[in-house]
Length: 187
Image 1 (cartoon, one colour):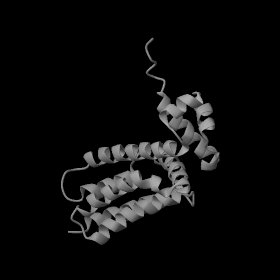
Image 2 (cartoon, rainbow, N blue to C red; image 1 turned 30 degrees about the vertical axis):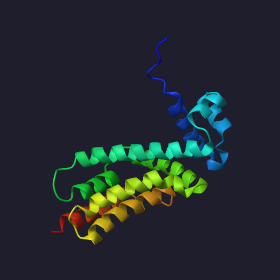
Image 3 (cartoon, rainbow, N blue to C red; image 1 turned 90 degrees about the vertical axis):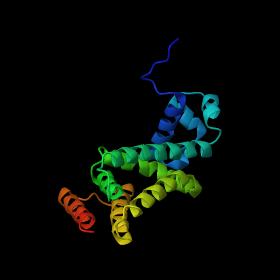
């Protein structure tokens, strides 16, 4: 019997279910039984892939890090070769990524759940940020310029992560113009 390519595999279904539970009700509501029920798999089937809640959260973080890394690599590849490539990618990642609000909502749930449960679970995403920072610093601009661009993007992410406020279109355009000017104005 051939598998249905449109139906996600068990691991993907379980991870999607765990993420949905976390987003809807918080990490405290995530249980092995609940994730199995939501994913429509047996508890034994879930445990075959994820031996514990910690393993499930670790897999969610790794999936998040893998997805963000793939997005980053595609955005960097789309930038012209040469100086400031990584920082241009940072700006594109901040302002141009399609579906950024949904990405931020999904990321927020997983990051907050992992941090709440065990801050060490954030290590895969910390490794991603270390990589981006190293690439940005290697771009040959003064360290303050690289930091300002990266921290502005991170600050925007945090305002969305914690749903503090949503900058308006004019504010976003002004921020983007300011950061591009900062980047292009350095020699």
